[in-house]
Image (cartoon, rainbow over all chains, first blue to last red; front, side, top):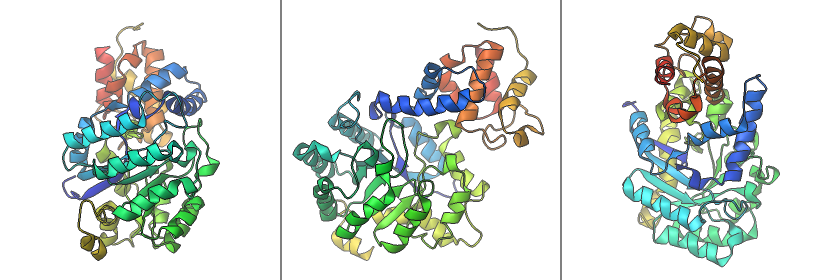
Length: 318
Length: 83
């Protein structure tokens, strides 16, 4: 994939069970088991769980880096959703999980950014932990997971948004359904609107925006200058939805993302990148410049506003 | 329990039985790529593992990481041979 060396994958996770509580994984496995059993296969949940767990064995991201090199992905953004407040069977605290991400970043210099999540209901301790990750660890923004039980415009999140505004950091949020042990209704994209209006200097990214609520996500991107979408999830939903998204006039708002390791059974990272062209994700009317925006330039613009990593003047030039 | 030797053709037939009909129409051969040629997704790969375990008798779930890394039909054949 040497012809596309500039890719930034804006949506990845560390493939480790420490990042996903057992109940979260169990819910995912329930859905897989129902689908397989419906085909008359001799399925047990235990065996499906074993197969699923096989995708979560790259805790230091060594395999991911190999696959990034193969796919022409120069950087990946690791997302840290904080499930530890909502799901009490987490094996590690959110502080331990954040520290592990720092270890991975240091192990692979220049290959990873981190958007760090802290459930806003942790109170002042949570804000201090987030600020430490941003200021001391030089992480790159915030990751939110509304299905854990909060809305994107919840007042509890405003101190975090203040920090993001102060340092020029993006906020990326999961949108839509997820593991069935969590809430779906609360994760609708429209709930970002008040926060995006109140914090015009903070860029908000709606994850899975080509798959979940695509019309609402596109509407928000069209009308709020600081709202973006990432396309992770196209692997399951098919590339036709992407083709539609690229014809909505918001190519300056769309970010490439794979959701590693969620689709690991569908192939290597290079397969997921090549799938886009092979399966017709890009309309013929889409220019090379728009493809560059999608694959890396939009991501570079969002990540380049970080005043802790670059002078504010650079961010102003956008 | 392993049910004895199984031919490459039999493994190809098993794979062909769980993938979309359009992909299986021309037949499945060892050199084919699981995703690019046969359009195998996460659930289809799991289906292959379940059917191999049932019909061939291998302990497929002790080879989960190898299945996760399998790219071609020949990789699946190799995993079965090693079982």
